[in-house]
Image 1 (cartoon, rainbow, N blue to C red):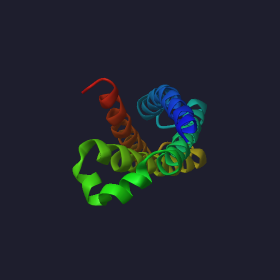
Image 2: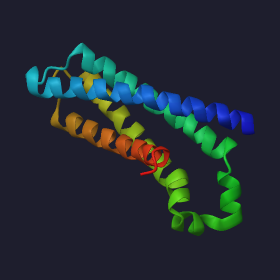
Image 3: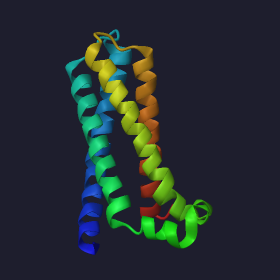
Amino acid sequence: MGKLHFILTKAHGGFAYIELILVLVFLVALFAVMFGYSGRVTKLLRKSTLFVMIFFHIQLIVGFVMLIGTSEFLNTIKAVGMGKIMKDAYLRQSFVEHPTSMLIAAILMTIVNKKIKKAGHLSMSAFWLSVLAILFFGFAFSIVMGRLFGA
């Protein structure tokens, strides 16, 4: 289990940086459509939405496999209980906040992809759902970055 967890952790971390670049491209495309193209959905926005959604789902699957299959999550719950996990900031962020915010971001991005794929013009609901999805992603990403850089 240790070797598989190590491989998945490295893959999860590497995909996170690719995902960050894709999110930045998506945001540029989103705001360009919102403020520069009279709301007409461009090919760049459609493609970037699709790729962000795909990478959100890849990250979610890899993360859940790590969480349930290769990490000490289940043993920790058995040993200390969920109440103790919720009281410990590090465990709560690792086992609850980070996965939950990525799950919400993936769901929202799926809805956004569906709305943008069908529409000729960007709707306000698609715009605000996009912003919300990226905020949830940013929250999940900042938890990890805060740990890596000691913030």
